Length: 181
Image (cartoon, rainbow, N blue to C red; front, side, top):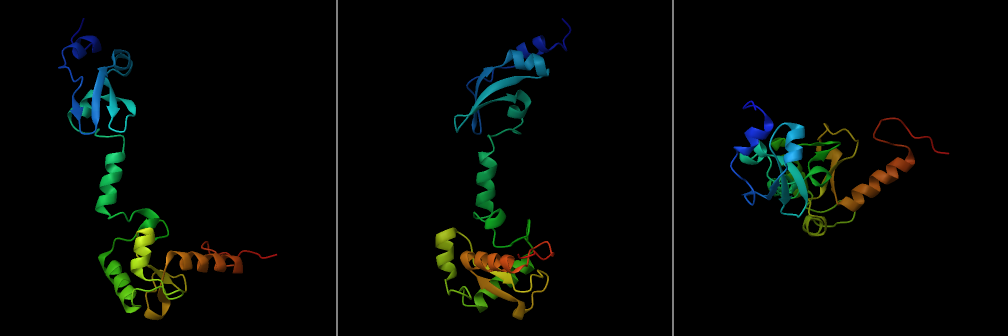
C-alpha cells in the first residue's frame, strides 16, 4: 500500500486512547469514520458526558478542548456574567464596549444616586436580583443623543414596562407607527 493510504498512516500514530485533552477524554480510535473522512478520528467523551467524533489533529494541537462549555465559561468570566442582553451596555443587537460610553453610563447612574427614576429601586437590588446594573434609558430613543435631559436610569422592570406602554401607544423600534384599532 502507498504510504499516503489512510490505513497505514493511522496505524503508525501513537495511541491517544484514555488520554485527556482539556475537557475531552479519548475513548477509542474510530477506524470507519477515519477512512470515510480520510483523517484520524477519535470517539471522545466530554466532561459533561456527551460523546462526539473529533479529529486527531484538533486534539493534538488544542483546537478542540470542549463541547463549547469552556468557551461559554470563559466568556461569562471575562464579561463578569454580563453578556448579550444582560450586558448593561447592550444597544439594539450590539454590545457597546466603548470605554467612554461605559464611563458616561456609570456617571449617569451615579448622578441619579444609583436608583431607578420611576420606582427608586437601587442598583444593588438590581444586581442582586438579576445580576446587572440599572439601564441607562434614552427618552427620545436616539442612542447617540446622550444629553443629560435625554437619559435616565431605570430598573429592568420599569424599562420593560415603559417600552411596552410605548408600543401600545403606537411607537415601535422600526420607526413606523403601529395602527391602533
